[in-house]
Length: 435
Image (tube, rainbow, N blue to C red; front, side, top):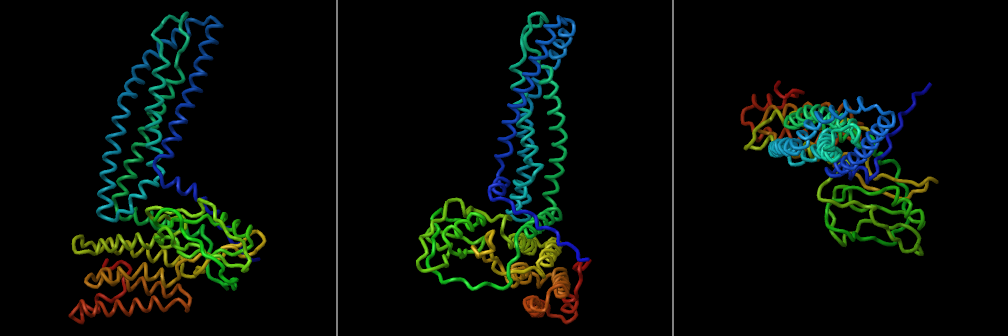
């Protein structure tokens, strides 16, 4: 009985991925939900007062009025203090993020922006503030149970519940922000995001079908920036409608300027003019993990290089980055790489998308660290162990770039370490560096 291959996770839509890179969407939705929640709670409170008056239960209504008068003080305190609390908490957090970006890499700010606990905390804080303000408008100055028309009982209870939720989220948020200042959790988050992206994206390589002749090229007409992702399904539909094959020219992560050819059209000479609709390609200021297979290695390499600079001199951080680089390269060791061929529902090729090759990924993960690691035996020992481990995992056709980096590392250590004993020590493989 053969084991079933687990299904590949469904790719995220570009819109959903772009919204995750924003900090305004979740709080805006939260404010809208706060208004709807207050409207529903006020309707329930009004129905309760109406029911008690119909039943002439003025004694019970008087108790509710007395309770809400006491709760009004708490709600007033919450509404006046919450906005100050929000400002202080997030000011301190932004300082912490700035320190982390200075010590590691500015790219860690994206981790803060995409953090679910950060968005949830900000959303609940703002929703609590707005909800408490709306509740204050429901209180009446009349205390006579026979004349009162609104008793915001449920609204007051919900305001206190939101306050309790805000306090719990504050504890979780502070813990999450403190972890962001530590190297281990940051590099683990980068590796986790990169592995999840690789699980969603289809592999490339395989036998490349022969494309028809190139009949046209489509230029980029938007703003200059980094190609963040492409809407594969939309481009495939365009190609199917025109009976052609589209080939993406730049790779995800390339910088494009207006007029740069971005799509090559392959088909018959009499193929119609292809018009690509808007929002099929996303161009921005920074790369994202949505479809970029090299971004995780890029970020880990950046952190390691900064750690090995003379101003920082932190080889242990570089070793931690190498641990995760080995993890990512091991995931891609037997993964089909090369151009990805996207087909329509009928199995006809419609879009060819270039992706990094194995050599590109190995160079991205090891080249810059290797160039800066020669004076640091802890890093060279870990790098030697990393190369040895990867050589055990890769197929024979992918050994060349790893062996090349090992040879270059040995030469650089020879130049950097004048004593033979020091060279032998620096080139001894060790998964902990020195320990």
